Image (tube, rainbow, N blue to C red; front, side, top):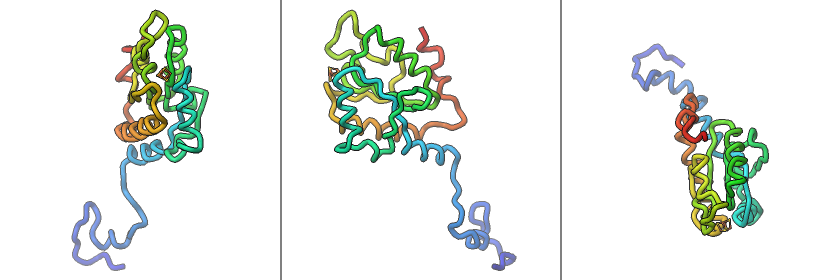
Length: 183
Ligand code: SF4
């Protein structure tokens, strides 16, 4: 193809060069490609302690099928996971364990508090129960209900999928929180 004629510019290419390339290439940003991959490959770590964990099991099973959202690879190793799902009542005795699991997850990572107990302590307003996991870890999405339905958990996963598009690849998210939650 002759590209030596008069030049009309399309971005940094002239028209003839653009036609020559056709749709063989696309241009985008590194952040967009990586977050596109992340969106459909969330690996949840489920910290399930009570009834809300049963709701998560229903969410993962065939009827609600969390794999439709690419989040079915459950990992009970924090090093493998990027989505912490806290489902159930968290006692003060369990709180340091939950915090350690969060600390061991690599960045970027996200947290969903499933149900009233994880979000606020629920009706366990007593000396044994943490009054919301956001006292020890940063929470991205809260799911209301006692218990929430699986649709609510799936909605939270979809909200995380929207949130992660804001994740910059070259900027460490931990700097936002580092030191603030350490006790
Ligand atoms: S929010 Fe309700 S259903 Fe969920 S763990 Fe607490 S008591 Fe159980």
